[in-house]
Length: 259
Image 1 (cartoon, one colour):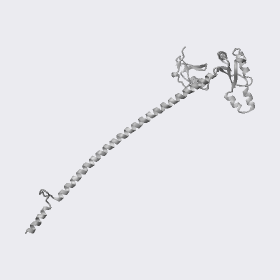
Image 2: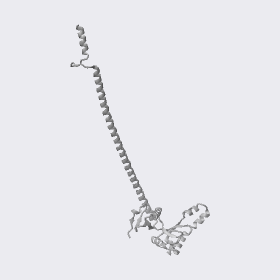
Image 3: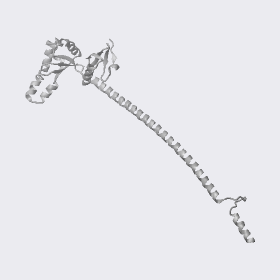
Image 4: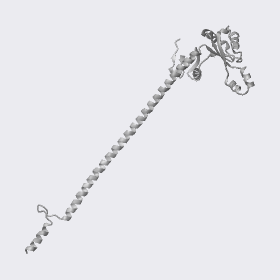
């Protein structure tokens, strides 16, 4: 009797927890599963929310980075453009200085175009031209030196044969004359008006850069007329300005000449 009583008590104690509360094990397991599932769901939702927030922050950071890259590229491009412009202007300034120095060395020179002469008698031809055509009575001492400048056509002929070279030398189109005195040189060029309507002309001996600048001015729609005097270049514009022009300058950048 006592043995059965102990067995019953032992069986009953398996379903008793501390405090004497009876619990169904199956229900307990179900509750644990639900609690774990609920906790997992909460963790999953919070983790998903965190991932979404991080993703938004990454997208925002990438957009800011793209904007910064665009700004850097634009500023770098602007800086590069400024640097190139600065170097170009510096190079042009050096070119102007060199051009001015070269032009200064030619201040006593003139070019006579269309003069029929040969290399051998060029000096005599210049003296005769000045005396008979320009009516300037030069002496031999007024001329320091002369030399002929064949045209492109004549240089091409010169490359062909000796006969053609002989013919070309008797038909020189340009003669460069260097005078000993600036005043004499100015007197000669001041008489060039008598050549109007002929195939001959007297012009200043300009540098290649100055010639290029004059050619540019002649094609400019804002320029009515252009000319050179003592190696400096001038132009009158369509709005009645008279300006001093330097190589590489735009018309709008040129200074007005005080009359």
